[in-house]
Amino acid sequence: MKSGLLLLSLLFSSLFAVSQTYTSVGDVSNPTTFCYCLNENGSEASAVWLDNGITIDGIPNSVIVFDQTYEVFLGSNDGGGHGISMTLQQESNTAIGSGGSALGYGGPSGITSAIHFEIDTYADAHSGDAGLGGSDHIAITTNGNFGIPPTLAGPLAIPNIEDGNYHALRVIVLLNKLSPSNSQATLVLDDVYSLSTTFNPFLIFSGTSPLYVGFTGGIDATTTNIQRVSFAAPGTPGSCSSFTFPVEFIDFTATPGPGLSVNLDWRTASELNNSHFEIRRSLDGQFWEYLGEVEGVGTTQEVQSYRFTDYQARPGRQYYQLRQVDLDGSYALSEVVEVYVGMGEQRFTVHAWPNPAQTQTQIRVEGMPQQGPLLLEVVDINGRRLIARQFASRGKIETTVDLSSLSPGLYWVRAGEQDNMVSQMLRVTR
Image (cartoon, rainbow, N blue to C red):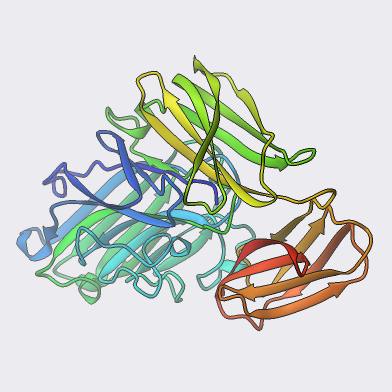
């Protein structure tokens, strides 16, 4: 999947801002005072928490109000399964969930003793998600139960939030110590879309354990159309929105060319003190070799397009990544893109959508020679064939595959000949 960024600024009320230091968990960077980048290098789940927790019993007020507004930025490429959760929890300041598909807070080892205020860009888990009429939605959940209905509130469909703009996320929690069941939790997005519910905090939290405040983020490793997922606090010094990132990528693609060549194309939305891009190639996604570099334009707010051609690509599958280098020598890595280079005229691709999928997916195979049979199969991560089809004609094939017999998890869609297959990872959810 494309590298994802979750940028967030943490500014708390005087009640909760007992510390301005934070603990990062997983793939996190901190480019400016209150700005955190989650999932920056493509890891599926990460988190950041306020170091010092708050003990509910230690606060004398009978009604405790938490009211904070954050500015969130979830990229500019619509699609895929990812998002964030603003969470209050009592596990620890190193808590994290099981994976990106549960927004960094859920899964088999999800964060318990918690309330989660989420923005999700994929309708796949909550009761009622299928009837949203769109993917992007907000919800309030508890105890890491990302995929277990019911939610406390929602889901509520929202317009596409991967629109390249910052959005205001307001979280309000009223803890009523005299009448616990009348406590309230509210999520407001852009002062337009809101969810609110009553709940009993003492069915979620204990009175003696500290209450940690922070964010989790998740991206879906099976999807390749997510540029960045980011958060920021609203217009404050040290926030993400007040910080100019050296290079903002729009896209990065790898396409087979004539012979054993691969064309690498990428675009940037803006650049700040950008010296150059180094091009790296790997055959296994782990060990990288330097291929060359392309000069950057320095500083610009205009869209720039770049191309580099690898004329000595290897037959088979390979991976490419850009290393963007600033004038001061600092650098950042782009997403990783994958390409298959065949011998002769055998240049073909396989694409499954939707991905993640629930009960069925559409599979398209194109670029195959016209003669001979084509094998299409779905295998598990151990290589065990679970679904297989054979087609007499080639060229371009589109077909629907029933996934209802498969358990939720990761699989490979493979197409081609027995000794020459191309594949794509597929996530099945329920």
